[in-house]
Length: 173
Image 1 (cartoon, helix red, strand yellow):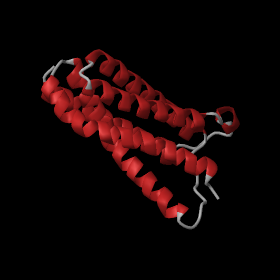
Image 2 (cartoon, one colour):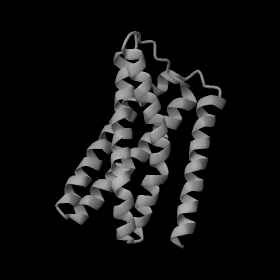
Image 3 (spheres, rainbow, N blue to C red):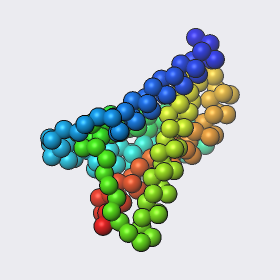
């Protein structure tokens, strides 16, 4: 497959995934069985934390030119992020939105983090998939060029995902 076709396919899949998430969040009636899934927010935060640690570990390894360890670290990061996404979809299907009731400085801080998290996660999805595509097809110069932009966004999204959980679980008025 040509690079151009692959990138367009990745953008199409990413767009469909984002549209699906918006539909899940805003268009689906939640069920009454949310207590059976109460573990998901903490599990999703753990997947985000694992992803953040794996991205940092991958960056460390590639800075030492250890390509094998870098690849393993990034596979762990991708797996953790994918498991987060599955858990996020299930959680929003069952539970719906979580309201933040915090006041004072916490409220604008939370929404700044949340909005930047959401917007950058929409950008991260096609960037991560394209970066992985370049690695899988051994297009190393394209991989390196895109990875320079992908890793900080991926790391930010993973860390702020944990922060959103902390705000909702422990600082939610």
